[in-house]
Amino acid sequence: MKNFYLIRHAQTDHNKEMRFTGITDIPISEDSFPKVEGVADFFKDIDVDKIYVSELSRTVQTVQPLIDQKGIKPIVNPGVNEADFGDYETFTIEEILAKEPEFYENTKKLRENYKFPNGESMQMAYNRHRDAFKKIVEETKDGETVVIGTHGGFIKNVMSYIVCDDVRAHWRFFPENICMTQIIDDDGFLKIRIYNQYIGR
Image (tube, rainbow, N blue to C red; front, side, top):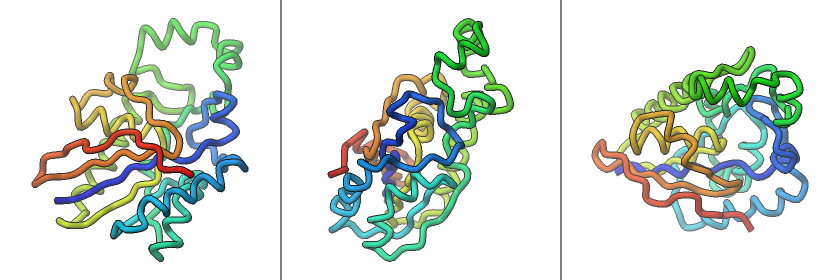
């Protein structure tokens, strides 16, 4: 059996402001730093073999207490980065509508195939996230426990992959900040054991 813990990063100021922040490197907010100490508390009695993080500092900052506790060098994996919102990175929905008044109409019509200008579509992000997770699972040995410090979009897409392998399920999940989702690989069969459990202080 292989054991995977997916942890969404702690809250950022952009999260609070409801901004589309995908690949922009925004740190966790000042008031989030004490909360992430709970990540180490949760894993205190759990052996961890590998820790993956995205290229963005907010994922590293969230699992840093665990990195320090276990003495494990994290593996940076671009595949677990958040979706790329292109020209709309760091925009609020109001700012997007000011630039593209047809935004709602376009996304409704194209749905998962709507591509953010100079960014990704949800289908593109889903494919990247699914493939990255599948590769991590393949590279994990039986009996190992892996932690992935990542983003809400990645967790949504992994859940969608496991449940129905369809990006359209993406919008049915809402992983919150500093929440953990546990997935086990039981002889090639992926099972969701825990979803969206808060592990912050």
